Length: 250
Image (cartoon, rainbow, N blue to C red; front, side):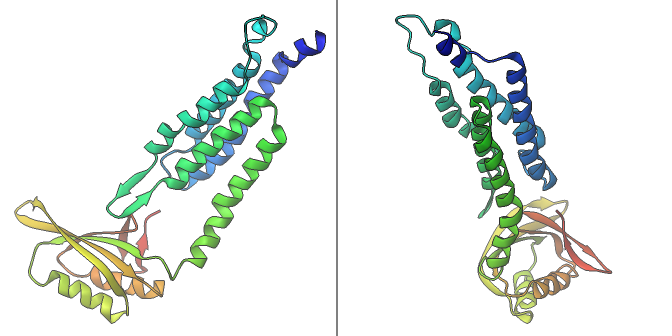
């Protein structure tokens, strides 16, 4: 009976240690997301990891008084299963769509993984929790750069340019891309409401760019055109500095 009782009980020190570990491990992953200005950042990941660890602790040790009851069946995995399915609503809130560009999928996945890490910490499966945290950081930091390097010549650049609605606008912009050997895969024109006394429109380009330097040169030329009001590359605004050319805002 003593062995069974100890299996379903936990000391206050061990309880506190697991909750603090959940805060630390979730915070480490969240700091990487916060550093890169993603939707779910430092505090969000901490709360998710701590919450899932607390639910796991509750599921295992919160009902210890009913273990020896005849008609009670204790299932420590029941609440954990609800965390795994229920965390989806939070991940969905991190996914954003801007035209054909979808962002936030990696952040949503990191929130889901942090919930799993919290469950591991709550269950005392600490080796798996630390190892999973390490693999998550490797995926977000190292593999992210490796993926960008491998796919640098295969992915299309999504570019949005807001301009005044004038004749010849599209032709001049297309000429700037053509001079740099940049292929226009697709273009969409979206008329907008008047900006002051002048009508405006958005041009949404999908571009095949083989050399980033040529893309920068094309954007330098485009941003000198007097009818160009705003440019955005892959969902991020771009600014022009006359001394250094075009820079992307991170």
